[in-house]
Image (cartoon, rainbow, N blue to C red; front, side, top):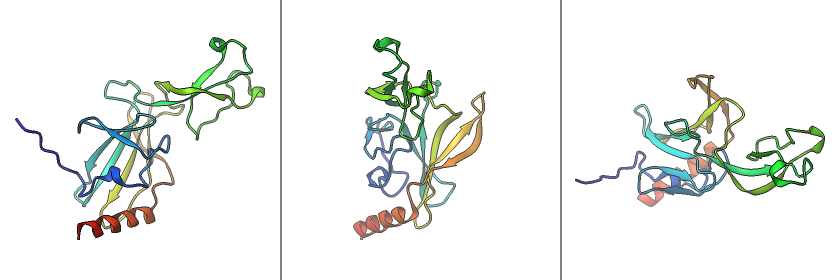
Length: 181
Protein backbone atom coordinates (compact mmCIF):
# COMPACT_ATOMS: atom_id res chain seq x y z
CA UNK A 1 0.00 0.00 0.00
CA UNK A 2 1.34 3.46 -0.87
CA UNK A 3 0.40 7.08 -0.39
CA UNK A 4 0.98 9.26 -3.42
CA UNK A 5 0.96 13.00 -2.73
CA UNK A 6 0.05 15.32 -5.59
CA UNK A 7 -0.39 19.07 -5.57
CA UNK A 8 -3.63 20.33 -7.11
CA UNK A 9 -1.76 23.39 -8.33
CA UNK A 10 1.79 23.24 -9.70
CA UNK A 11 2.89 25.06 -6.52
CA UNK A 12 2.21 24.60 -2.82
CA UNK A 13 -0.29 27.44 -2.54
CA UNK A 14 0.14 27.66 1.25
CA UNK A 15 3.71 28.95 0.72
CA UNK A 16 2.25 32.15 -0.79
CA UNK A 17 3.03 34.99 1.66
CA UNK A 18 -0.12 36.94 0.75
CA UNK A 19 -2.50 34.03 1.40
CA UNK A 20 -4.23 34.81 4.71
CA UNK A 21 -7.03 33.16 6.64
CA UNK A 22 -10.30 34.91 5.71
CA UNK A 23 -11.44 34.95 9.36
CA UNK A 24 -8.46 35.98 11.46
CA UNK A 25 -5.95 37.20 8.87
CA UNK A 26 -3.22 34.81 9.98
CA UNK A 27 -0.76 33.61 7.33
CA UNK A 28 0.52 30.57 9.22
CA UNK A 29 -0.93 27.22 8.16
CA UNK A 30 -0.57 23.74 9.67
CA UNK A 31 -0.94 20.39 7.89
CA UNK A 32 -1.75 17.18 9.71
CA UNK A 33 0.28 14.57 7.86
CA UNK A 34 -1.16 15.51 4.46
CA UNK A 35 -4.75 14.97 5.58
CA UNK A 36 -5.86 18.60 5.83
CA UNK A 37 -4.56 22.13 6.24
CA UNK A 38 -5.63 24.38 9.09
CA UNK A 39 -5.10 28.01 10.04
CA UNK A 40 -2.35 28.08 12.66
CA UNK A 41 -4.28 30.68 14.67
CA UNK A 42 -8.06 30.10 14.53
CA UNK A 43 -8.09 26.46 13.29
CA UNK A 44 -10.25 27.08 10.18
CA UNK A 45 -9.92 24.08 7.82
CA UNK A 46 -8.75 24.54 4.21
CA UNK A 47 -9.33 22.13 1.34
CA UNK A 48 -7.72 22.65 -2.09
CA UNK A 49 -9.45 21.32 -5.20
CA UNK A 50 -9.09 21.64 -8.97
CA UNK A 51 -10.89 24.29 -10.99
CA UNK A 52 -13.41 23.27 -13.63
CA UNK A 53 -10.68 22.42 -16.16
CA UNK A 54 -8.50 25.56 -16.04
CA UNK A 55 -4.98 25.43 -14.60
CA UNK A 56 -5.12 26.60 -11.02
CA UNK A 57 -7.04 25.72 -7.91
CA UNK A 58 -9.95 26.59 -5.64
CA UNK A 59 -9.42 26.86 -1.89
CA UNK A 60 -12.41 26.22 0.36
CA UNK A 61 -12.18 27.35 3.99
CA UNK A 62 -14.66 25.66 6.33
CA UNK A 63 -16.05 26.78 9.68
CA UNK A 64 -17.82 23.45 10.38
CA UNK A 65 -16.83 19.81 9.88
CA UNK A 66 -19.05 17.26 8.09
CA UNK A 67 -20.99 16.63 11.32
CA UNK A 68 -21.85 20.30 11.95
CA UNK A 69 -19.26 20.73 14.70
CA UNK A 70 -17.51 24.08 14.72
CA UNK A 71 -13.80 23.89 13.88
CA UNK A 72 -12.94 27.53 14.59
CA UNK A 73 -11.71 29.19 17.76
CA UNK A 74 -11.86 32.97 18.18
CA UNK A 75 -10.29 35.48 20.59
CA UNK A 76 -12.40 35.61 23.76
CA UNK A 77 -13.94 38.91 24.96
CA UNK A 78 -15.84 39.75 28.16
CA UNK A 79 -17.63 42.81 29.54
CA UNK A 80 -15.79 43.75 32.74
CA UNK A 81 -18.44 46.39 33.61
CA UNK A 82 -21.30 43.88 33.89
CA UNK A 83 -20.02 42.13 37.00
CA UNK A 84 -17.06 41.78 39.35
CA UNK A 85 -17.53 38.01 39.14
CA UNK A 86 -15.77 36.50 36.10
CA UNK A 87 -18.40 33.74 35.74
CA UNK A 88 -21.22 36.31 35.62
CA UNK A 89 -19.84 38.40 32.73
CA UNK A 90 -21.09 38.08 29.14
CA UNK A 91 -18.39 36.35 27.11
CA UNK A 92 -18.12 35.95 23.35
CA UNK A 93 -15.59 34.73 20.81
CA UNK A 94 -15.09 37.55 18.31
CA UNK A 95 -12.84 38.38 15.37
CA UNK A 96 -11.63 41.86 14.42
CA UNK A 97 -14.44 42.39 11.91
CA UNK A 98 -17.17 41.74 14.50
CA UNK A 99 -18.85 44.24 16.82
CA UNK A 100 -17.49 43.98 20.37
CA UNK A 101 -20.22 46.03 22.10
CA UNK A 102 -21.54 44.43 25.32
CA UNK A 103 -24.68 42.43 24.37
CA UNK A 104 -26.22 42.88 27.86
CA UNK A 105 -25.84 46.65 28.15
CA UNK A 106 -24.96 48.85 25.16
CA UNK A 107 -23.91 51.69 27.51
CA UNK A 108 -20.96 49.55 28.68
CA UNK A 109 -19.28 49.99 25.30
CA UNK A 110 -16.69 47.61 23.96
CA UNK A 111 -15.86 44.33 25.70
CA UNK A 112 -12.23 43.61 26.61
CA UNK A 113 -10.05 40.68 25.51
CA UNK A 114 -10.08 38.12 28.32
CA UNK A 115 -8.16 35.04 27.26
CA UNK A 116 -6.67 33.56 24.13
CA UNK A 117 -9.42 31.56 22.44
CA UNK A 118 -13.11 30.74 22.59
CA UNK A 119 -13.72 27.19 21.34
CA UNK A 120 -16.66 26.53 19.08
CA UNK A 121 -17.02 30.07 17.68
CA UNK A 122 -20.20 30.50 15.66
CA UNK A 123 -20.82 33.19 13.06
CA UNK A 124 -23.65 35.57 13.92
CA UNK A 125 -24.83 35.53 10.31
CA UNK A 126 -25.83 32.38 8.40
CA UNK A 127 -22.64 31.38 6.59
CA UNK A 128 -20.46 28.33 6.70
CA UNK A 129 -17.42 28.72 4.44
CA UNK A 130 -15.23 30.93 2.27
CA UNK A 131 -14.00 30.20 -1.25
CA UNK A 132 -11.00 31.52 -3.22
CA UNK A 133 -10.44 30.85 -6.96
CA UNK A 134 -6.84 31.07 -8.24
CA UNK A 135 -6.26 30.51 -11.97
CA UNK A 136 -2.67 30.09 -13.08
CA UNK A 137 -1.64 32.68 -15.68
CA UNK A 138 -4.98 34.36 -15.19
CA UNK A 139 -7.03 35.88 -12.41
CA UNK A 140 -7.29 35.69 -8.67
CA UNK A 141 -10.68 36.13 -7.06
CA UNK A 142 -10.99 37.53 -3.54
CA UNK A 143 -12.13 35.33 -0.67
CA UNK A 144 -15.93 35.16 -0.99
CA UNK A 145 -18.20 34.17 1.89
CA UNK A 146 -20.86 31.56 1.15
CA UNK A 147 -24.18 32.05 2.88
CA UNK A 148 -26.54 29.26 3.93
CA UNK A 149 -30.24 29.20 4.75
CA UNK A 150 -31.69 27.99 8.07
CA UNK A 151 -31.55 24.36 6.83
CA UNK A 152 -27.87 24.71 5.93
CA UNK A 153 -28.36 24.76 2.14
CA UNK A 154 -26.02 27.05 0.19
CA UNK A 155 -27.49 30.32 -1.03
CA UNK A 156 -24.40 31.05 -3.14
CA UNK A 157 -21.66 33.59 -2.76
CA UNK A 158 -22.14 36.39 -0.26
CA UNK A 159 -19.75 39.15 0.72
CA UNK A 160 -16.36 39.38 -1.04
CA UNK A 161 -13.34 40.25 1.08
CA UNK A 162 -10.66 42.53 -0.34
CA UNK A 163 -7.80 40.04 -0.24
CA UNK A 164 -5.79 38.58 -1.82
CA UNK A 165 -5.40 41.05 -4.68
CA UNK A 166 -4.71 40.43 -8.36
CA UNK A 167 -1.32 42.16 -8.11
CA UNK A 168 -0.32 39.89 -5.19
CA UNK A 169 -1.32 36.82 -7.23
CA UNK A 170 0.59 38.06 -10.30
CA UNK A 171 3.75 38.71 -8.22
CA UNK A 172 3.53 35.23 -6.63
CA UNK A 173 3.17 33.54 -10.02
CA UNK A 174 6.15 35.46 -11.46
CA UNK A 175 8.26 34.42 -8.45
CA UNK A 176 7.25 30.76 -8.76
CA UNK A 177 7.78 30.64 -12.53
CA UNK A 178 11.24 32.20 -12.08
CA UNK A 179 12.10 29.42 -9.59
CA UNK A 180 11.03 26.70 -12.02
CA UNK A 181 13.21 28.00 -14.89
